[in-house]
Image 1 (cartoon, rainbow, N blue to C red):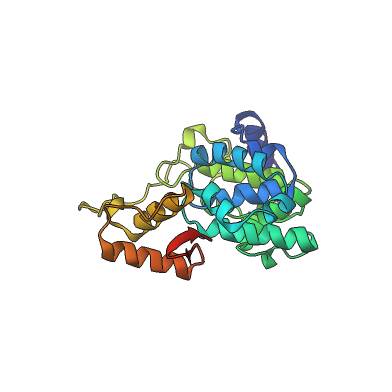
Image 2: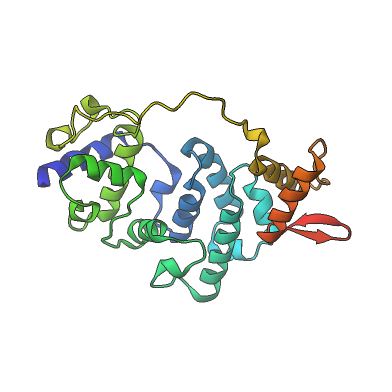
Length: 257
């Protein structure tokens, strides 16, 4: 097992992507990155993360911002409720400090709590995202927690996630490029997921999520509700945004937050 660990950690040291949040142990910066990375590709997150940290470099700075400012800065990242949860978490931290149980922060689940605890506070815990879980399952050498090398949880968590994101992917396991193939129970035998059924998927522009995004983007730009959308679709989207606390009625119109 030690040889496996050293092989993966050595590979990670050589091959890891240079991502800005990997150069810090600031729990706030790490929390921002983890929330942004939920359901959003790394390439899209990097410039937005850098802009965000430049604008709000601490939990206290973000806590002092208005909900409208936060939502406007989030436009384009999708799933706007993540922005409000991050804002609420920053307000808790600014008022009371970082809690012992990070899961008590708004919007912070088990994975995000483990990631921040590991990367920022040095906790010896497994941060198990879909990539790390896939790597552990394919290795067949134990659970993610059992694979952790003593005292190196943060480095191991990053390495396992990096391997799953770039080599041991869901669709194409590149066993020939894998640093731990010699210890892997699935090496050379991993099949990708079944081919998707043929059929015409509804375009994104036909979804309610698209309309919601258009509404938020328009309000963030200081404009009225977007034109060119069927009134019923627009009403449904706005009603949902109001329920979620993302928009509010102001002087006969609407405003963010």
